[in-house]
Amino acid sequence: SQTIHQWPATLVQPVGSPLSLECTVEGTSNPNLYWYRQAAGRGLQLLFYSVGIGQISSEVPQNLSASRPQDRQFILSSKKLLLSDSGFYLCAWSGQSTNEKLFFGSGTQLSVL
Amino acid sequence: GEDVEQSLFLSVREGDSSVINCTYTDSSSTYLYWYKQEPGAGLQLLTYIFSNMDMKQDQRLTVLLNKKDKHLSLRIADTQTGDSAIYFCAESPGGYNKLIFGAGTRLAVHP
Image 1 (cartoon, rainbow over the protein chains, first blue to last red):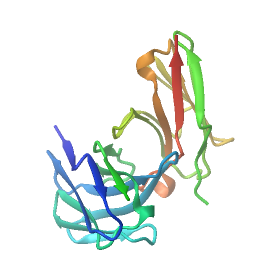
Image 2: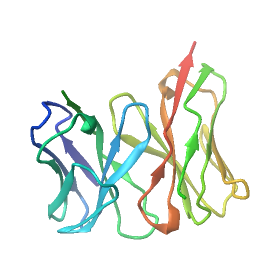
Image 3: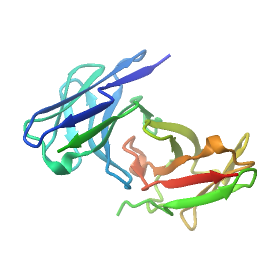
Image 4: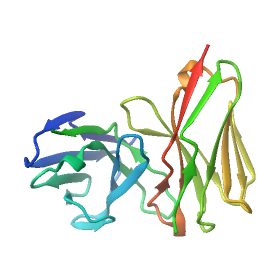
């Protein structure tokens, strides 16, 4: 069966520090991968998605970047965190076919102080 | 444009039925989804409905879809305290896998 792992679960970082959140998927190959952010009291906003190694699409302009160095690895990064980067970050995967369901990781709560 | 709207909060008594409503904008969405998020956790796919269906029932869950009004609802029968969570409605505009989520409805179940 397929599983998705996301870490760390909680992270507290100072403003201006770098960020690296990692997500890996097991039990499937060539998945679509996604990074979503959930700001406090708000819905989910799609940040990045990837349909293959090295292929990244950004949905909103921001202080973050994403990379996919391996088929089942998706990394969310920042060189210098802002206060506004605080939120709950969720990684997700789906199959490649149209209208595949999304399966989410357990999330990372990021607090930038 | 793409927009999914939900009421933010719903409070029900244990044993009663809960109805969570959602409106969406993109009529090309082939599937519409309900996800559940428990405190501090990721989202769990609860159920989904194909756009050519009016209703889908899965145990205590009933999904109703009104395509004309672009209205989706989730009914939970015999609501339990374990149903307390945030429920997200999502559409898949243009047939892509990039889901558009609503802000979520926080369901509180009290004795």
